[in-house]
Amino acid sequence: MQKITLLVAERHRLVRDSLRHSLEHESDLKIIGDAGDGPELLRLARQKPADLLLFNATMPNFDLKGVIAELSALCKSMRYLAITGEESEERISNLVSLGIQGLLLPDSNFFELLCAIRTVARGDRYVDPKLKSHCSSGFNPRRDEISLLLELTPKEKEVLYWVSQGFCNAEIAQMMVLSEKTVKNHISHLLKKLDVKDRTQAAVLAWKLGLPQQGPDRVGLS
Image (cartoon, rainbow, N blue to C red; front, side, top):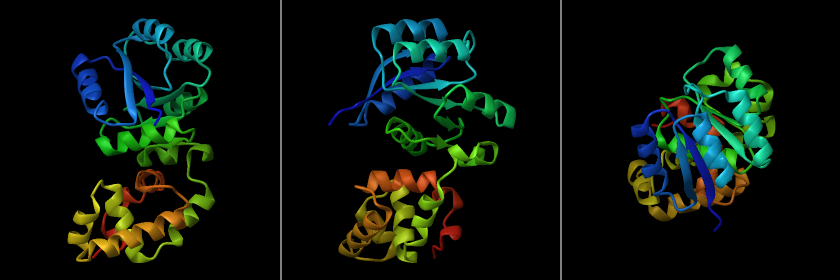
């Protein structure tokens, strides 16, 4: 399996080390470098082009427009996932206009980060659900994607919710008071209905559509 290569740009050394340590445990991800400012990031990118840049959009000494322009010239296929604490419509519009494909708030959990990385790396856009009202339609789920959830039965939607939270079949079976075989069957059916290959893709789609953020009550859980 070909790994997704990442560059990480974050002002705080402790945060960079924590991100590297956590992400390197994922079998499909490879961190090829991390930087604390724009010049350091560009030096790394010239040596080791990556598939995706994960960066803090509020770093100091970071001319975002200039950095993105130079990175795009170095590696046209590189994609960008920004962690931004600013929720103003103007700020979000500026980031989108620079060609940023993913937007994530700093209070996101690790599973949301993984979903965002994998979504952006495969060529799709990702936006934190809390920012959707500030984004153009290009960042919001397509109508055909939204309609996919309507194809799921209440039980399948419940299983998808727990899958999106990272639970395994045995744990889901225990919480829903079902057999593991029944849970496995539900997952098989929902994968087919959602037109995805595996539970990871299903979880990514669930997060993109905002299912986990609705909370248990909103998805019809008991």
